[in-house]
Image (cartoon, rainbow, N blue to C red):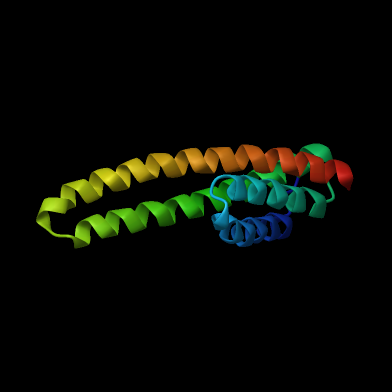
Length: 123
């Protein structure tokens, strides 16, 4: 099975746009964004149900990792900029945020894979 990176990219952008809009409803907005992005990625490829799930999984994991890395970098830099007392706190908070980012990426990937299966089935 060949990966259609165009479909993955469009699904990824869909997740980012809907995730930004979904900040109004934290948690639920990101899950819906991941699901819809997975459906888009799965629908745009021409490989069927399983390929749709794979494309949704790739789009969701890329989106989740990007959001997680931005969260981690922001918290770590904020901790480092507050001075020597907070540098350890910034590192620990950044490490904790990285774990949270990994969990977000995992949940987004699972949600997007289910959406990709549906998108491949709809095609």
